[in-house]
Image (tube, rainbow, N blue to C red; front, side, top):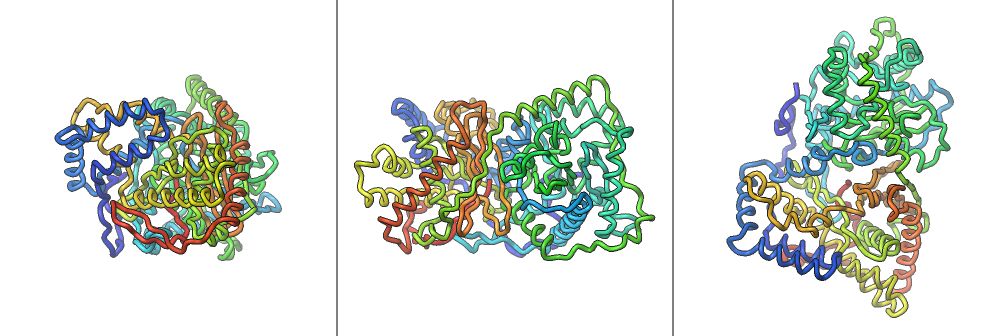
Length: 640
């Protein structure tokens, strides 16, 4: 049975106690909010917003009342923002999971000699998954510590416990994150998708866990069963690719039949989904591999060979296209990175234990999941397929390896690689659009109990001054003025980063004030209906650093129709960018953005080479108190 989301996991607990997420001072948040939007809106609009914000924050006013309620909630809960954030970021969202929500990790392309080779890879991968899950179940994972700015703080490990025992259940208005008890016997199976069919592979038979050779044997049986066209079932995985309300409505139709109800229950309780993909027929490159991970190429390719509600979905393509697609609500990207890096190292460092499968005759055959269909359900499947295909056609993706230099050059300038790259993204956007826009960069707040993320608003006034120096004012300013503005922009970005990772970001706080006003049945305060607030939460530029120590990369889609999704992976001698947008927007083009990014990165390097005097330390101000920070570290504020 699912357990409540607040129930602690069983087994050995970490020996440290993390603080609660703080509630920032109200005046501080309101001041930071005004600063963050002043240069992004017209003066007339800013003055209107300023007046609304000042009224909200006046002594004895609405803001102080809500702040008091929020402080009370903080005292009485483990994490005052967790449920607000989870609902707002994920569970209340109605868009389809592929592209819009589910990110993907793309593994190095594999060179499989034949079909059997890909199944051996899949069997070895499943073995690694079971090893990793054993570490989670026994609480044997080493505690994570913060890196980069303010390094060395222990981080909350709860997200790891949700990698394999959660499921996102669609709802008509709000989804539910279902959490199963760790180590439950209900979860002793995985689902294998092959040719749009779904099969149950039991991992424990007669109280004995399957060996790798047995897993391979079961996968071979599944492939043969999937090739049997007489028993082939409709592609029900397509329903999970649809909008959340549409999928919830379809699920309500499905569960009226006991056969469908049972198949859904088995999928919803599995440890993970393993997708055995046929060759896609696409030319295999970084961009095409990323597309196949994000949406499977639509219903005509592998888009139906998925079950998007399951957080961990491993893809093994016969043509060597492999990776992970994850439902994002239970955990952040850094947890996915840790898991997949473990698996990649397990795959290369632990020899495959494929031998003679002596127990094959004793193993029951995997079970094909059956479905009862009707003309109505067939119509739902057709509609889901068409909507997925539109999403596939609309996505504009460009995975780009910038090879002129990498993070080592940036560190030699005594600059934070993350801050530097964030400034370069702003420069690229300004080059393309002649303005800056509200920008999202995720910042981990795992140093707090049950911490997830807050937002670093990277489009700062200092960054605007720098990008103008490199564009509009390029010929009228000296290199020394330009480098000064670059340092100002990097310091401002660092200030924003420190504020966010220490629980002093503005986005979570404003969200909490907004939501608590609804809890006490207050009319929505004007600050939250103001056009500036609404626009400031439409993140046209959605960014995240996802660094890896092995050869793989992450990708995700834009969060608004006229926006960009930009995921970057800084390596020693190169920078890898995955940029997405939608063809349907006349305001965006991934290729144009990449070109502007390339040009800006080269110009920033040239500026540093000619003008920069490395500064070993820089001083930033946190809550008014100067802090001296070493600026050569890799700032890794968080992922997604």
